Image (spheres, rainbow, N blue to C red):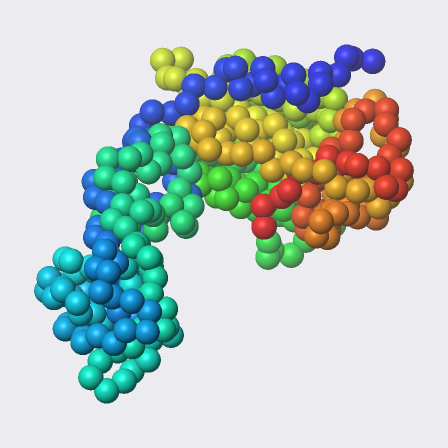
Length: 405
Ligand code: AMP
Ligand code: MG
């Protein structure tokens, strides 16, 4: 039996070969979510830009000892958010609302719940200290400080953070173009009717959605019949139009598996027997459209839908993230308590599980772990990673990788 390469070794070999992309483009902030910053961004303003009131109440000078609890004071100004008040007259209060700038001469706010309206003024039932209920200028962000670094993937809060400093466009890495091809004479595109012996091409949809989840662009190379010439042609088109090609199917050792020969025709290929279940056969190589063109990386994933999902998630995804320049991807693994019995064989297994619970997470196993059972992946919210030759019992801690929603 051929020696199986451990998953971690495959991943580290692949990662050592990636050259992160360096082409950038400027996009409007509104379209920037999910994109990877190509430059670090420093704040060009303080946020907030002025000391302002955190509450509705009355601004006063906390260094003025004549202002005391139980005292009654005149209101000399009224300052709403968006308006600048005048310099506070000594011994008076300024009516102030949340977000309004603290006027010159004031440095604290008494909240309106701690005051009483009385004839001839406002009575303080509490007398807070210097700085009370004041949000100082730069409390959130100081002018000149770094907001986000190069390689950071922008999420919703990040685009809001940038907007809070007046940014409306950012320089990001161009989206990788990932070409996908689905090999197999048996495949039919939904919603066409199935003839005997045919099945729907589901891998294309799963892979395309996962690639878009990573913030990359999909190039569709369509269905590729099981022939060497059709496979070569599709790969050449991919090499012409994309940054990377991912195929599914055709990487086993059957007579109808043409991916290996086709890739070797256009470049070079490593075919690994990876110690992973599901998904043992995995091809990786480089293809070029013409002899003078640049070679682009190629992943040949197994055809079984679950194998294709798992090998993409575990092996191709870290490669693509690094290729895209994404340095912010964090591990999403944690430990949960197994609710199941399971025994692995000679390969590390990625089981489809559902993780739930609060303090103590539990991992429930989908009943049906076959590599063709896509229902297991649809049901699951995590993959449990179980090392080779391991017996898992209920109550054992198992490592789980959360899947994107
Ligand atoms: P292969 O790796 O080409 O031998 O395919 C392994 C299994 O996966 C076979 O049962 C194929 O019919 C199935 N399969 C291959 N490609 C796809 C696809 N795109 N969508 C759904 N099933 C597929
Ligand atoms: Mg096939």
